[in-house]
Figure: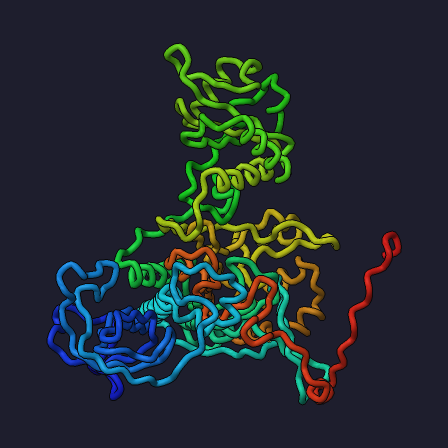
Length: 593
């Protein structure tokens, strides 16, 4: 890197606005940027705050100057200390200013649609309509440069570990990965379509068959799914695959990249990422995306109420949630939590304020009079509750009890996802299938190329829902960053998985014949992973939505206010593709569907 690349110096400027300091006093400078503010003191003095991506510096002009906010200008002058008492500690350049300035207007500007400052509250639709103005704000500048730092750290980590960056196609064949795909019509093969890849999954497995050994890519992927805070149609992920590896090897590769990225932007390396089985995550947190910051895990109260006379607790599983310091929760709030639990699928919610009474810890609850001393003591011990706490309990089927209290745990004691600290966790030992579809076929939990656990292969036909998989997820602050698995590398095992899913041999051959054929020519054992760069960057930047770390995102409805997309295509273009747009059929009247 040359000095001009590092300092921002070019033939038009000597450096950047926000990088000036006391060490530059006496130096003549030439700066370029946008006018943030202009203040005139009579006819003899004007102050211009000049902004570029590095920050802002005050420039002093003798006389008046005919410029307005967001004019693009070049200013020449001499760096000097600000007068004593006039320093601005809120600015990195607050000890200095540029004096004796001359101003050259490079491009005038109309008044912007909103103030280009972080503190300005602007409707998101307006921000996205004028995204080129919005991007000038310090927050967006910081986020996009943080994103670049994350991607740079990821690349360095993968290169250091012997991975080779390979680009995979954006035009691909349809794959059953569980999400809707964007279809691309073929002009040369009318009536046939490519799809935009949900991920490079099959391509990277074929690279392993091709002997690439260790592949990675910071890949653009697309899924036609409903948008939300952590999801866009287009997203970016670190995609990797390696041959002759175990699960622990893959987790080690990815952990190195993630921790390097975090260290690159925070200055501190996170602790080694802990691991948790899927079963344990469900039992302790009610979800396979646990937020480890949100208070204590769930307590198992099933044994406490084994054989109880209290009908509310006569259920296969009783789970408890301790809310630290929640003993003062109002009755109205407790009633609202009860209704929320019912809305989430529970039959009800039991609550116990933990109080101190006559020098001893006791329970304050409508159910307390129905409990025996052993049940009271067992509840307090299992929940590890102390005076001043609140204990919530749900009795139901195990998954329901866990899921309901897991959600209440987040709502009662949770934090915004972007708020520190950053708590990473690997979730391992996922089930192979997640329920049955309407046709009675098991629904794949990750994707159909995941290797079943070696001890469970015989269960693919006999009891598919009991089959474990070699899949794993990485979770950060309750957001799933990504997922991966050890892959199937044998054609006979892949055929058995397709059959268990209800896919005929003919259908499997039509859709995946190229993959099955590759397996017959010596596919090595391999595994991989992919995690969302957008999500990781959003959390590291302290944002609640990935839209704030993407240069040109879509709205939650999938629209692009800047370009007006999506838009109709010209009839001539449709004709060339052999496509005719048909109006959707109206909904049938009630009772006639």
